[in-house]
Image (cartoon, rainbow over all chains, first blue to last red; front, side):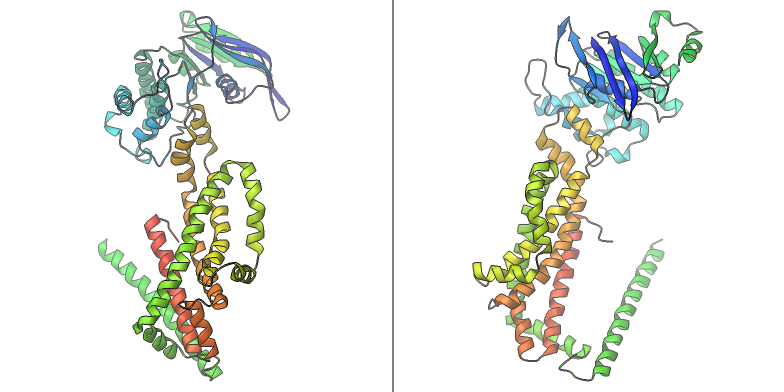
Amino acid sequence: MIKLDDISKSYGGRELFSHFSAEFPEHRVSCILGASGVGKTTLINIAAGLVPPDGGRVVFETDGKERALRGSYVFQEHRLLPWLDVHDNLDLVLKNAKKPDGAFFTKDERNELIRRQLALVGLEDYELANINELSGGMVQRVALCRAFLYPSEVLFLDEPFKELDPKLKDELYETFFRAYENDSTKRTVLFVTHDISEALRLADTIYVLSGLPAEIAGKFDRRDYDEGLADRIKELI
Amino acid sequence: MDKKLSGGAFALWRRRILIVIFWTAVWEIAYLLIGRDIYFPSPVSVVTTFFRLLTEQKSWAVIGWSLYRTLFAVALSAVLGVIFGIAGGLNRTVYDFINPLMVILKSTPVVSVIIIAIIWFRSTDVPIFSGFLMCFPIVFTGTVAGVRSADPKLVEMSRFYGVRRTDMLKALYFPSAKPYINASVISAIGICWKAVAAAEVLSMPRLSIGANLFFAKTSLDPALLFAWTAVIILLSFVFETVYAKVSGYDKT
């Protein structure tokens, strides 16, 4: 579980969050949905430890015990090194990663993991391709692949499908589900989006964020999903 | 397509040749106007002297020694400049410690460096030391700028995924800094030739282009002076071009 406890954060005199608290359950896909500028990226970056809050704290718990967070992240941009090929980009994050038993991966293990994960996202033929040779959808698939490849307990996604056309988005959603279903660790996923249909498609639970400072204006579980939900969410945003 | 390309290349070469002819004509006119070989030699006498130099075995020993001094100074500046530049680019404290030295070195007249070096070193090592001190700040500053140009988003990603510092250096910082390093090394090559020649004139190693420049002056032979200067210009141009080709740096 990721607990945001009494979080406050201001940027340039704008108070984005004031005593904000939320809990995102383990092994579930949670979505923070909100309009542009409401502070979604700031919130996910606070949760991931990339941005320090002005007040409050982030707690990460597994099986009821507080632990140091080990996360992977799919950013808005692919953030792959353009001068390395697909394999080396993926290998870069695995080299210093530890297996559950605390040992480092051997080179053969890393190669095998990379091959398997690339096959899962349909990029097995592009292992040695340069990043510049890949299309926008393909590079985001590599970024997704990197996030699932890295041994983490939490996966953060910050609108990674934002710049893609609807057809590519559909392909990426399928890729995401395939990787998520095949993920043996069944990670806790926290993603942010402004796209209601994306949230309804991917999330087990949607947290609607609105206001300044931002509050959770609504929380919807997958079992609550119905035809009118998109309109109700629109009103909340 | 091929025809078009070769036509374009032909036009480029024709333009270059015309530019050379134009400046040679300007030189010849200046020579005719001045009318005294002792002040200003004709292009014909300089070219003749230049080719005569190339036929003499001793000239090649002279060129070889000056080449060695220049390349040694450039290589030393490049290696140490990159090492300290990366350290300074990554660590503000290291930069703050080294930078005052670089500021002083950049503003120090090359003759001051040479005269101090003459006191400290053997005559053959003075040009190496002077060339190094002139070039090291250039490579250092270029490398620092290159390391700092690394995309902060890639840095953030690498840190988030716990990438080792050494891997970040190899995979992120060094490739980001490479164009800056190459540009600074190319400009260091040109400056080093000038610094080494000046140091050779003052420290007078037996086999050196600088000493030959000095002899040309004392024997009132401006054609020889111009010819040795042409050797320096040519060598500097050749090494800049070779380095740019080898490193894949686009000089244009």
